[in-house]
Image (cartoon, rainbow, N blue to C red; front, side):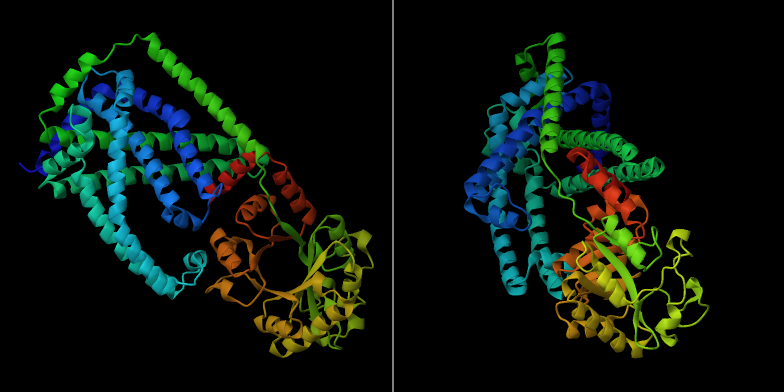
Length: 611
């Protein structure tokens, strides 16, 4: 009978054991993870930090990780920390196998049993890890050859984010090399599948001998074992997808009803993250328990030594009273609370640097007549960093600050700006339409706007609005000349939906920063020759912001009038938000900056849950 034909019987054995031992399995899993959280995980982190300090750096990031791991110190760190991590995993699997393999073993016996055999488990991890690393060496050399041949001299971060043709060529070649390694390593993993239970249940067998015995007992069964492991992984992945998908829907539903109020959003996010943590821990426990049971069931079919070995070991296990396990659990919970408080204290000691500039859209269309000197003055009082204004050319070559290409919204009928002289336009009262206190406010010239902002703590983002192709060069020349004459090149920047106008401006004044305005994206906007992109807020996602940053292009989001948008855009590292109400956006930004580190991280988590 083949191994696959035995699976129904093995499954029946496994589920019967789970039904009869679920209380002990649950208690062991909880206790072991608490021990791991309090003792074992910090031990691995401390070891890694010591190796980093020896390397000469307190931390590494991005692609420095690869160079660290390839250094002698990094390789030693990989072996030591990897062996400890494998030993921790083996200790958990060993405890579960003892529980499932012998009904007489209580959960606290399973908890203390693997600790006595931990040196052998550590050696098992060390041997396996070293062999896998030695096996990987020629494949790493091959990947290095691919890197030197295809990616040499290229920025790796830029390659990954921008994905030019060279990226796909190199990634494809490296992927083939990795695939070959994974096939070979996977076969070795299956050959050693019984090494852990052999070490655990067969006294006197050395670690190296256990690996040899496992290879002998799995011979001829690798395909069946591989099929079973792949099926287990598929079931675990499907279960995780269902649970995490349900959590995402629940989180979106809850946070949508909670709204953007920080007083409600932060605690609601904390509750959802707690639920996430519990369910993820449950998924992890299910995966570990089922894997332990799977390996144990297959091992039982290939070895007759299990029952006697566990019986022998059971006789040597000291029996503990009920009060002792209770004290152990109580102490572990106390340590968990202490660790949590220490983490909270550490996080609160950190300071997150949130940076964001605020631009008053049309100089601040909420608190004053749009594109007016009055609105500019109010934007300055509201601590806006920039005022965005629109400039057009009149029929007599005056550059005025006005958004619409006709005069309908300011009481001048359907007359076109480009066909109307300045004097006629300035007869219109744009202030009374907004509020009585602004009566008498006129359409300003661009020169007047420059004079009003000169020396003030605000910059001007000037949108060029040419009346067609023939107007691109005249309008751009007049606008750039006015900025140069005012000596305000450093206080101004240009933007437009006319890319040609921006290129003309670059030639006229190379020091003047230019930005393209877009409401939709077709193609890669980050390839435009601009200093910043002014995009509809829905387009300002983290991946686009990152790709733009690689080309030193800032991303500005418009038009943001809902305070709920500030935190997500801030988390996506948008540099500037453009709003009709700079005072309201400034207040929300300062509210976010005033949060504790933990509350700020929770707010970031909320935004991640909604995306």
